[in-house]
Image 1 (cartoon, rainbow, N blue to C red):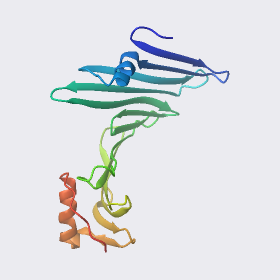
Image 2 (image 1 turned 180 degrees about the horizontal axis):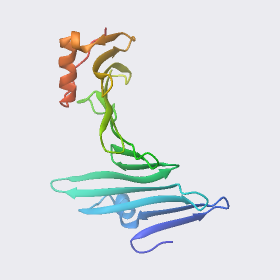
Image 3 (image 1 turned 135 degrees about the vertical axis):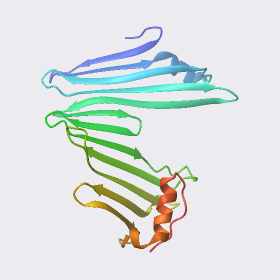
Length: 203
């Protein structure tokens, strides 16, 4: 179904699955003409099955800002349910909530981009909260990469109410190093946590 502003598609399957997608027609026309002006373009796809409570909604928002040159920004939004787990996402931030226990897991994923030579790391953060929003445990994992895209080393920080805090480094050869007893590696980890990317040697 097409209108002046959008292109929509509907699909009904005999297994109960329903899919609905919508794309901004103006964005597609501007993309072909390569003459995007300041604007916001929203597209989404939704999936639902009449035989279950599971569903999925993904929204993509493209923002175009033209100053001296055109810049594009994209936001990803997701809201879904799979069994008793509800998932909420905004770009790199994910929240998983268990509907039975009301426990929550918050994850932040910053992936490695090989083309971005100024930052040779990926970062993963995870925190677990109980039904009273009390922190139970968490972890931060930082992976550094070589120029060929292979993992060079992994820094991992864990903290929990039961085991306290731990900090380790794992080399690409599988060697485990306690960062508390190696301040030179801990210093590199602190730089990475500050959004810097020093080179990491092999162990």
